[in-house]
Length: 209
Image (tube, rainbow, N blue to C red):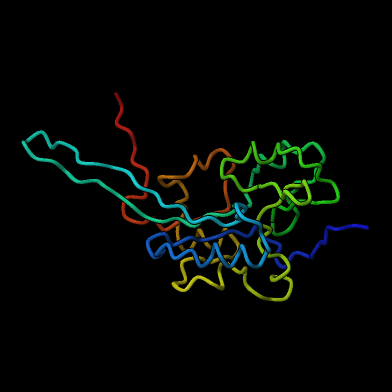
């Protein structure tokens, strides 16, 4: 008997997330709500709140120093990428990007738990379900969306730091930034993600030699 349940896409456009890192307080309500909603065991988290720190005190060359220390929190899950490596390296096609809304899901009827998707994903989205021996990940709360509800992380964030919708519309409204300190280069998978950067989050261009 099939354990995998498909839901009809609620959009014919690629869906994505907008993360307002400047507003995120690091409360981890989104992470906890996702964990509870998906009944995840210890150590398995579909949405993760990272604490990113860096920078330092840089000499000004005039006897003083410049402070570029930064610290912020960043909420990240599967980004349902436009060019997901996980689907390319899945030998059974269990990891797939469905047409329409472009949500990346795991068909557990096909998954053999080889872990190739987890090794491939630069965001660490696919994770092993130790009880079933199969891979699991954020599915954009397809069950809630089918009922006209928001993804649990969006609905739970007390500061409204997480939004979702067609990625083209989010980019038109909030811009195209998704390369920030703490995340891999977006060119690898083209994530369906827009970020409003916290102070210090934006990657700085390295000076040419």
